[in-house]
Length: 143
Image 1: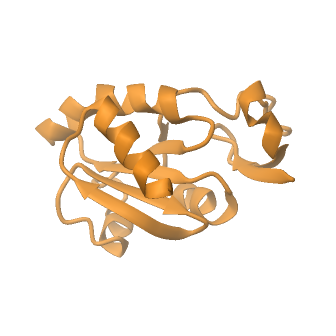
Image 2: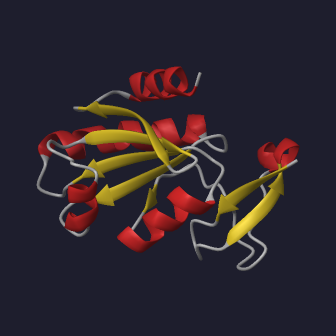
């Protein structure tokens, strides 16, 4: 069985055998790592591609550069990426740059974490969280 994974560098769709996700797979197009252990900054177009074409759950941090709690949570989100990948893709969406996307998902406060799987939102959490809480909350949503 294979898993569709979107490359964080070139947005190509890759088919990776499900039992090989832990083997640090590379993109078939750009040959860079499919999982870097870091959150991926996403534009609105890239967000839709990751949401619609990837089989890997997508945890999105909706944030803004002027938001103090967002900046405070950034290192924790970075740490959570290292723990959750390759089974969850962590991404950041700047709500100042992607206002239509934030409106589409009714983001009312930031930071807001939204977890998507197979194109559907399956969980949402507003407010800054520590790395352990992010990991625990994400895993609980995926059960």
